Image 1 (cartoon, rainbow, N blue to C red):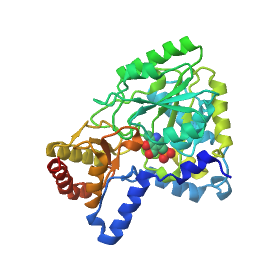
Image 2: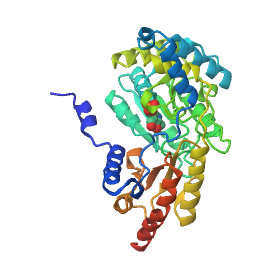
Image 3: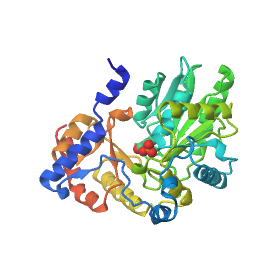
Image 4: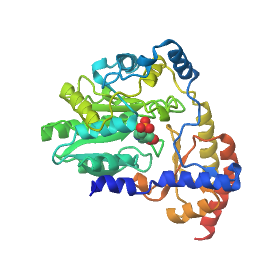
Length: 397
Ligand code: PLP
C-alpha cells in the first residue's frame, strides 16, 4: 500500500530528464559534438567569483561546527536580513527579516506556499504555458489546479479568460515572470489588470486571492526589460525566489519565500508557510550556502553569454522560417512547431540528435522549448540541423 498520488508522481516519466539522459547516452556513443541538447534549464554561466570566494573564506575562518551546523528552521538571521534589505532597497518595499523564510530553492518555496494556502475546496490557477511542477505540487497537496491559457500573441495573461476561471474557491494565481518556457516578461499593464481583477473578486468573495509570484528568473532580462516586483502593485502577493538561475547555484538548493507585511493576515500566513515547510521536512536550508549568498546578495549575473545565444538562436531560427516570440527574459525560446504536429517534429529532430522539449508538459500544444543556456558553439553547430528538420516538415505536408 502506498500513497497513490505520490506513487503516480514518482513513476511518471519526467520528459525533460528523459530527453537529457538520451542526449548523454548519444554523446557517449557518437561524441559530444554530434549531439545538440537544448533540453535542460541548467545555467551555463559560472556562479560569480564572489560566491566561491565567500565559501572558501567561510571554510577557512568559521568554526566547522558552526558553518556546517543547523541554522534556525526559518533560516539564519544573516541571510534573512540580507534579503529583506535587498528587497527594500531595490523595490522600495518595507521588508523585515520576519517576512523572509529561507528555503532549499524555489520549488520547496512553492510547495510550502501551496500547502499553506490549501483549504477544503481550494483552487490554484496556473497560466499556460507554465512550469510543469505547479500542477504536480497543487494536486499532490489536494487542491484543484485550474489552467488558464495565456494570450498566445505575447504570452501575457489573458484577462477575460482569467476572469472566467476565478471562483470563490480560488486561493491563488501563480504568475511566473520572466516565464519558463516562453521567456516572456509580464508587463506592468498586465499586472495591474490582474491586480484589479483579483482585488474585485477578493472583495466579492470575502477572502483574499493571493498572487504567488514565482521569480527564479527575476534577474535574467535583456534589452532593458523591466520586471515589476508584484508586491508593489498587489499587496497580497507571496514571492517565491531562488538563486538557482540568478547566481547559477541550482545544485546548492537555496531560495526564499517573502510574505509582505501588508498582505492580509501576514503573520498567520507566514506561520502557515513555516508550518507547511516543517511538515515536509524542508527547514534549515544549508548553512554554508546561506552565509555565502548573504555575502553575495548584491551580485548580478553577467548575462552577456545568454544574450549572445538568445540573439543568435532567435535571429537564425526566425530567418529560416520558424515562428516564435522574441523572449525578453529567462533563457528559453518557445517556438511554434512547424506543421503543428509536435510528436512528428520532435521525433524527426531526435533522429538527428537535436533534442528539444515538446510543449505539452507546459500545458499547451504545438510548440517546443529550447534552453539556450548552452555554448554558442553548440548553437552554431546545430543551426544546419534546425534547417534540415524544418525542410523535412515542409516537404512532408
Ligand atoms: N519555477 C520555475 C519557473 C522554474 O523554471 C524552476 C526551475 O527550473 C523552479 C521554479 C524551481 O527552481 P529551484 O531549482 O530553485 O527549486
